[in-house]
Image (cartoon, rainbow, N blue to C red):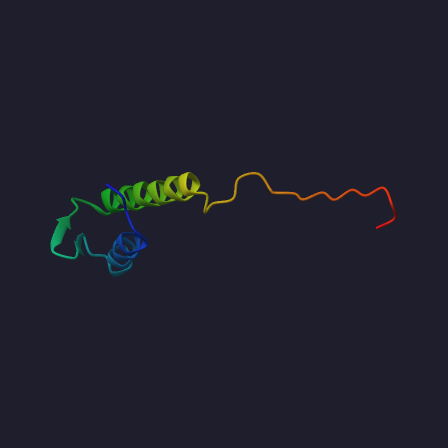
Length: 73
């Protein structure tokens, strides 16, 4: 499943409120413990990071542009 930043915001908001039930649109998930909710947050963050790397939104190696001239430009 491809997660969105909205999923992450909903999970973090539930954690901040101390709730174990999270709603994503028309679906509701109830976690057994806060630790399980925190594990879900880590999984969503990891997936969002992997999506960003795959699409090129997360920078890999720094890009460099080198210009060399021989006529005094």
